[in-house]
Image (cartoon, rainbow, N blue to C red; front, side):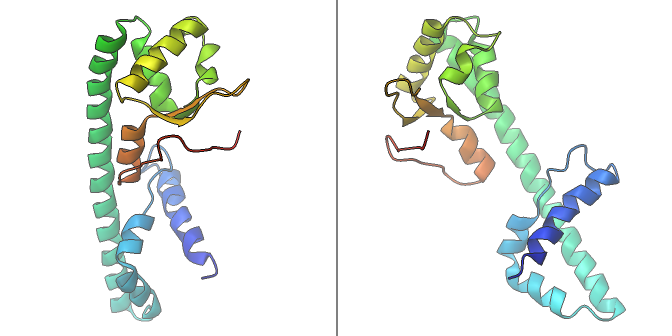
Length: 179
């Protein structure tokens, strides 16, 4: 309730990173601990003797193993999505800029269309706009906010976000996102 749990969960990936077990501090246990909240809280409450510490360590190792398996599955799913979308976008756009566009969308799956216009690997603004429209029409991209005046449209690579979140990410057809 006081935030100590969140701080502790943040320290785990930082510790593993500092010990060079992780190449980046991006390993979070919160989903597992939330799913096993009763066991987690009970384990914390009874920490007093050697046996309770052994039980706690075993619980924590199961959490790490489970989360590692989930993360590996997500990474495989993201790689599969990337390869599938690469073929799809190449077929739809028939453009030499399809892969750089896909890379930009994977780097930032919710983006303003204008963010792509000045990228050195992108073609002209009309060409980028045409490709984005093709991807919207094909259902690859979801429109989050319509363009209005000088405000660019906001688009989302929904399939990537759904994999990353571990659940279906859906927005209403056109939502209002603050500028």
